[in-house]
Image (cartoon, rainbow, N blue to C red; front, side, top):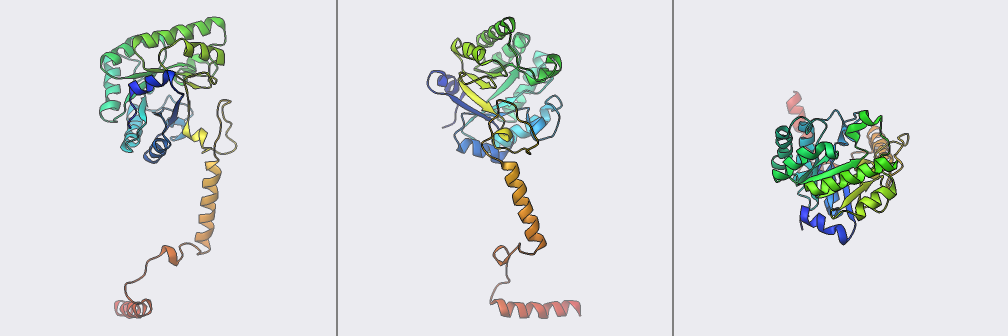
Length: 287
């Protein structure tokens, strides 16, 4: 069954929500097979796939390329496309134009936007254009220059109150869910308990209505010298596994162990007779 926006909202009082990032066809297939509720095509791909230092450099066209790949897998999960930096900051018209590309061309089910009261007009415009919106509060990576880096948000009573008020505003505007990133557990818990829409936590403790992680963090597709954020749990060590496989492949190529007869093709007919005929043919060609 394809998961929809109303379905996700309905999970609020029934069970916790699982969300994972994906940026390509095979990962989308895997996430859907694992019955993830939501696949986020996050702008985190700027870092984990394209190698940028932050998320600010990625464009709408680059994001759209990966949204299409994820949607081509026809996942049962709800597909949410991240709106990249400066794709929703200039005008309502440009915001709708960019978001509609993710829906029309990318076949996403919804978009995600960072920020609270500053984004009131664009979120309202998107909702009016029948484009479902997932909010994102707390540590919003696109605001890292204003925040002075990737710092935990809402640690004082004043800042926690502002977060709470922003969450209520996003709900009022019509967001169907909100990502809470990098906020104290008690703040995320209080917000979650007082909203009718689900919250998805990342570095926000265990009391949100769901959790999200970046797939490369979760499966360990990073070298050992990479320092994970505190909220990350590695469930595998794919980087080491891939390196080991590549090393074994390289050694077998150099030793002629690969490809073996098992991985090779033969001429049709009796092998010995075919070989004799082929050698005769070679002599004719070379003569």
